[in-house]
Image 1 (cartoon, one colour):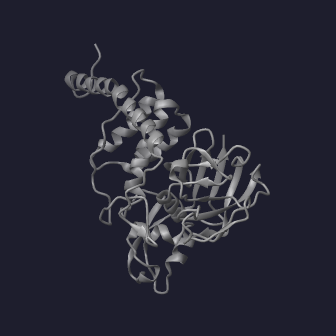
Image 2 (tube, helix red, strand yellow):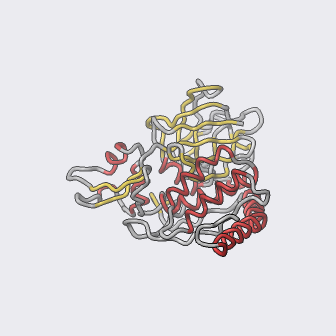
Image 3 (tube, one colour):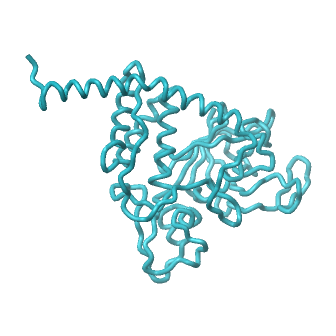
Length: 336
């Protein structure tokens, strides 16, 4: 007869809990997939609700929490595939970390991120959704988790400038302003303890799905719906890098096709809120000029091939990406 530590009843209870986890997956993951599909199909004219602003423009919402060590959190229900596949079991184990007290956010994030390249279908959608949700806790807030290698606390020294602190950590100063609720760069004060992010950020654009995945180093953060080049002017596949001096707020732009010059105040100004200039490094991107990630005045074209080859974002998303991408370091891979 097998002897179970803690008694038969405890062992039986554990079995029952695992069966419950398995039984709810189809409902939970199915809802996630359907909701995600509906969101991507209908987002054309939508705009993000943005409590924070930079240069008078709305930015993607971030968690509004107090600075300091992270507090215990209540996680969403644990799910795993009804077939009990190996990867689904690992997903369930990672999610169980969030149900512990205190919640192990960073360990759960790292485990889910390791599973990301192995996942497909509903599992892939679920993992990305969970990682994006966790990013609001560990990244887009003032909280610093002691065990997190991607974020840290920094005590401002006399003479420090926010731009210098950002460069030391390979991120733009704008994101440090955003997560620390700093209204102006010159408002930085010696002795202040702020949260810093260890960059750089990178992006991967999928032409087949009109999506952009954002990463901090090698850790997935979130995805955006994008617009890409139209027929005959397709966005070139390959590796790009954010150009030094290539990040601009509503620059004057001349259409290379029509020759018309647009100014930000023009009612038909096409570039939206931000411009992130790119330089080609590998593949078909090599030697290409004038390509960028930017906002748009035609949000209904997001998710479609309508640009002259540039990568379009909703204006709120363009501001967030602008705040994250570091000139000379952030890479953008465009793939099929």
